[in-house]
Image 1 (cartoon, rainbow, N blue to C red):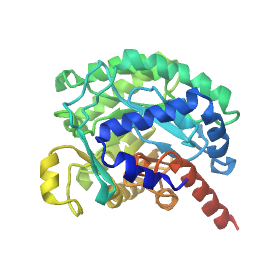
Image 2 (image 1 turned 180 degrees about the vertical axis):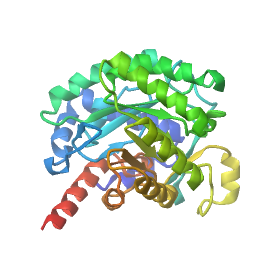
Image 3 (image 1 turned 90 degrees about the vertical axis):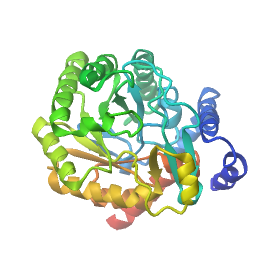
Image 4 (image 1 turned 45 degrees about the vertical axis):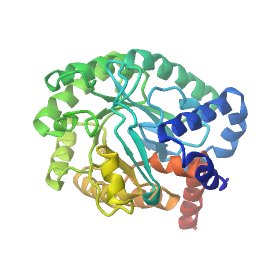
Length: 359
């Protein structure tokens, strides 16, 4: 299983990162379509001891795949077969859009990081909703007991003005909420102009309130709602968001998205300047992500979930986040470097670590 890093160096490291992503994702989906992942499902399925209930939802493992890998809901079942406790689809916008011009995805191999300025490229809510609706019965049939959870992450269409953002988020909500196990409002990507301005409390309050009300209305049930925030917020602003989430009775916060910071990187400054703008993810985000998690956990009650993401690479990282108060943990960038058995290794490491504590 550890041959993938060598495979990555030989095959993917010299390839355009976006092309490599599409090839790798197609291979994962092909394994499912041909039945190969039936074997993977048995081998990678999280041990029952890892199950936990968060936001009223039963998760087979606390570790899941963050939004960004499967932007359009094409491969949720295939990814679930690899051992992820949940798969978050998106970010999905109210309208289809191509995203930013290429190249828009860049590897920082020395830093085990990625810079992206994808710009929410996706097929739009109307096209993605049927895919999300169709996959949940598949997961229920394949995974007896506790199935992997399907989250949906929604964002603002680039062409929509900030003044009309609430209506745009509601358009996506109406199409997607009924098919999601939980819903995430993404206001923290640096790659949609002006989007992060929506993290301002006075703007964020009506947005979250409207989405939460509409999600429950169209679904005919309570759809757990979370907001995803940036690591670049000042500590006082993080406190304000936490207080708003508590005041509105939201189910949780996902912390954190990518960062616009470029400090303490091994990648040469000239290369960073050549790449230009975009959100940085991966190992360099580890410290700040953990800081934000601890700050949120100290500010929020136990009934509000905190999902920690940013710089997560190993079972030890996941365990550290859980010990710091995370209810769930997500990863993404390390998946590109570690390969298809990454989630399975993390689940196995978690099981052994938790069993050792019990002893």
